[in-house]
Amino acid sequence: MFGKSRKIIESREAGTLKEMCLDILSMAEANGLLKISFFHHASCDNEYLATLATLRTTVKEFFPCETPLVSYIAQGTECGRLVAEVTYLTDIGCSIQRHDNHLLLTKEGCKEIITGGIVPHDISITAFEQSTEIFATIGEILASNGFAVNDIYRQWNYIQYITARNDGSQNYQEFNDARSIFYSSCDWPGGYPAATGIGTSAGGVMVELCAISGNGITSKPIDNPLQIAAHSYSQSVLDGKVIETLTERTTPKFERARLLGSTIYISGTAAIKGEQSNSSTCAAEQTAETMEIMDRLVSRENIPLVNEGSSYDILRVYVKRASDIAAVKAFMEEHYPAVDKYYLVADICRPELLVEIEGIAHI
Image (cartoon, rainbow, N blue to C red; front, side):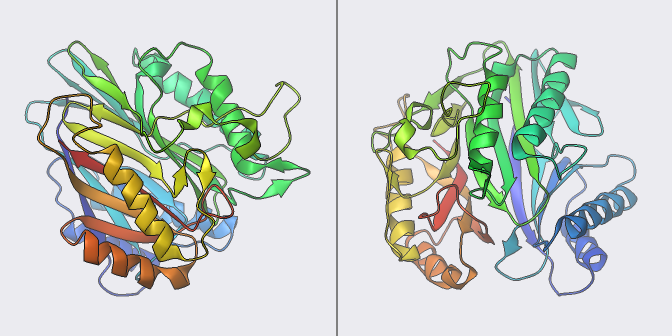
């Protein structure tokens, strides 16, 4: 296992994109720095591509020797300024091989891949085509480092206009179909990865992931008794037409969480019980139900190991409507005041859902 920590850094003042980026980098520790995921709204694809290029160049100039991975997610932030989630390696004695789009960590017979944002060459093609190309790239990264596809334990899937339909085909369903086809290259006896599928305002499809391999790895899927597993959803809750190469819409292939050592990687979680959404138009109500579901997921009774309970390390809170952030934040601050968390404006994978939350916890 590889110890990691995560820190949320907000730019302190509004300014140009480069100025806000440099402000964040000045607050980041160089020691053990692995990856920086930036969040900021983009109004169109050209703005997204220009922002991504600026962020990559600025980070490279600031950290020229051991440049961290860079991802850019086009989601608005609560403060309106640039925000970053920064990942550090806390283990001593690890070897780090740095590549353009991924890192390979090795230590004592264990190895892990962490990717930056994997993007297609053209974000104007369909979501299915973008996703298929991205998964081909991921397959090459895994194979070149001696990993199997089923070594993936955590995945983030960002999809522009996630619930939009084009000629009857929904972007999220197109992504799910491409993922299902890619995952079908192997068996998954240990369950699927933990994952988030969330919307963005620009940038097409982008995927980030972590995979781990080696002797003595304890990686277990965690189900939730309050929810049907996403990969077991019925056709009635899936949207969009069936693509020509398949006989039906495929389900989202992820687990509600994965336990890796003592760390719980919590998938994107919304107010869904069984497989039916909470249809309330109150974001605070949906937030309360989402956290009820998540609390049950990480509870002592639900974790498949003897433990004395768990605690959240960090929570990423996605809110569909910016006007709802204040109410969502008020609930979270009242009930989870000690947890590091931040709030982003993002579309959710079902039109009726207003909030989605992901995170990391420890037993």
